[in-house]
Amino acid sequence: MGKRPNFGGGNMQNLMKQAQKMQKEMAKAQEALKDKEVEGSAGGQMVKVIMTCSNEVKEVIIDKEVIDPDDQEMLQDLIAAAFNDAVKKAAEESERSMSKLTGGMNIPGLF
Image (tube, rainbow, N blue to C red; front, side, top):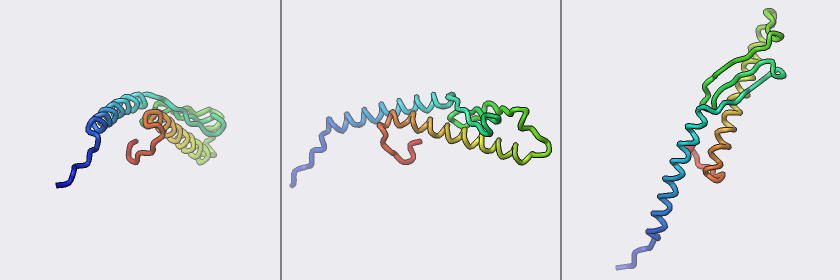
């Protein structure tokens, strides 16, 4: 019979401990991101959307100057742009927060 390969049992156990620690830290970071707020805006800050990094909208602020009953489409476009900006910022904040824990490793499906 051939010799069994030695995968370094101690190293494997250490690796598992590190993975469990990282998993706990990531869970804490994800929990913190639920309450972390970002602000998206459009039209030179005339329309703002404040939302959490878990995409819960907290507030929509619309400056009176952009409320024109004769130009409903412009206001709709500004609101959509502000939402998109907020979603982008939330995703960037989440990625930044998680990459601190993973050391910049790109792990598909992680977040």
